[in-house]
Each structure stands twice: as structure tokens, then as C-alpha cells.
Length: 283
Image 1: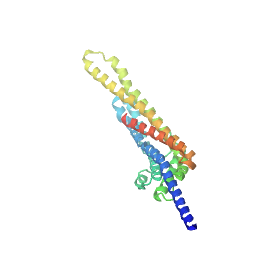
Image 2: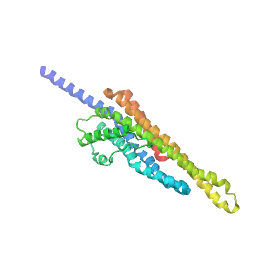
Image 3: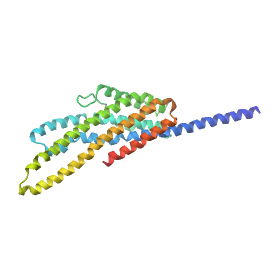
Image 4: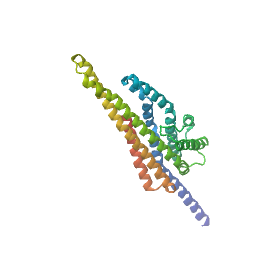
């Protein structure tokens, strides 16, 4: 009888452990999905490229005097581009690492470590400050330690706890850069469309009719392009805000990741992020 009770106790213990594992896997599904959706921040790379290539689009519309200043700004943008992209890459890799920890599979993220670049610098006028540099350095050290160890002795809870401060600061950097991209986009729009606004009203000669018609068509095309891009910067900021809110929720619930409230909240953020990502690509 005693042995039967002992055997029953063992079965009960095993069932409890298995149930706990199942519950953990279910609860971490939402974490994994949120991390995967957040890792699609890669779409923001297109905004960085557009910022870098501003001069290539502006140049045909510039006067010789304006062109000299524009070339100087072009050199500055190209000098900071790699730093801007590195700030994004380290956040993407963090989310990919979080996804791995929340799932059953283990795959090698070492190539992404090698692709992060040599770091970032505080750059006057860019929005990147020393706090962002320190957060980037702290995050790269965390990721190198976790990935190089094969994720040993690392859980979602410890990853979120150790990475939270860096995530918040790096997301602040990306929001700051997105606003810089938006401001540069607005200036480009004023430069390009302003040429048409000034020149077309004074082109009333009969022999210029065909040229004026072509200019008006081109003007409408550029208006449409810029209008679509106006919306893209707003959407990008919304996406970064969703990532920040979702990570904050996980940080607040580290001791209760299986909670129904957190799972539903993360599912909501994930759905929003996939919709935002879709809109970023379609625009």
C-alpha cells in the first residue's frame, strides 16, 4: 500500500511538472509572437536608407548655390548612416533572441552578432546621445554573452530583466531618429514641390504648353509620393510605441508571465505590429 501511495505521488508530481511545462509553453507563445513581430523593425531600415539618399532625389531640383549646401548635408548623412542602422540592428537581434528563448527551437544567431557593426557614437545634431551609446554597448555585451553561450542558463524572465533598461533607451533613440527622418523628408518635400509652385505660374507661353503639362503631371506624382511617405513616418512611430509598451508589460509581469491579462495584451500588441508592418511595406 505504501509503495502504491509512493508511486501515485510520483505520478502526481510528474503530472504537475508536465502541466507546468505545458502552461509555460502556452504562456510563452504570446511572448514569442510579440518578439517576432517586434523583430520586423527591419522595415524601418528603408526609412534610414531614404534619409541617407535624400540628396540623390533633391539634386535635380537644386540651384547651384543650394547644391553646395546640399552636398555638405549629404556627406554628413552618409557619415552617420551606419550608426543609425546599428542602433536598429541591435534591437532586432534582441527581439530575435527573446523569441528563441520563448520557443522550443534553438538556432544560431552568431551571424547577426557579426553583422551589428562596430558600435555607435554620440553625434551632435543627430539625436544620438551618450545615453544611447551606453545602451547600445550594454545591449551588445548582453547579446554576445547570451548567444555565445548557446542560451545556457538564460530564460525569458532574466533576458527581459537584464535588457529592459537598454531596450527603453534604444527605442528612444529610434523614435528620435524617426523624427529626424520625418523632418528631413518635410524639407525635401518643400524643396522639390516648391520649384513647381514657383516656376509653373510663370510659364504661360504657348510654346511652353507641353513642358508645363509634363511638369504638372510630374508635380502630381511627387505630391502623391510625399503624401504616402508622410503617413509612413507616423506609422513607424506608432510601431515603436507598441514595442515599448509590450516590453514594459513583460517587465511589469516578470513573475507572472502566464497571466491571462498579459497574454491578451501581448496578443493585441502583436496584431497591431503586424498591421503596422504591413502598412509600412504597402505604402
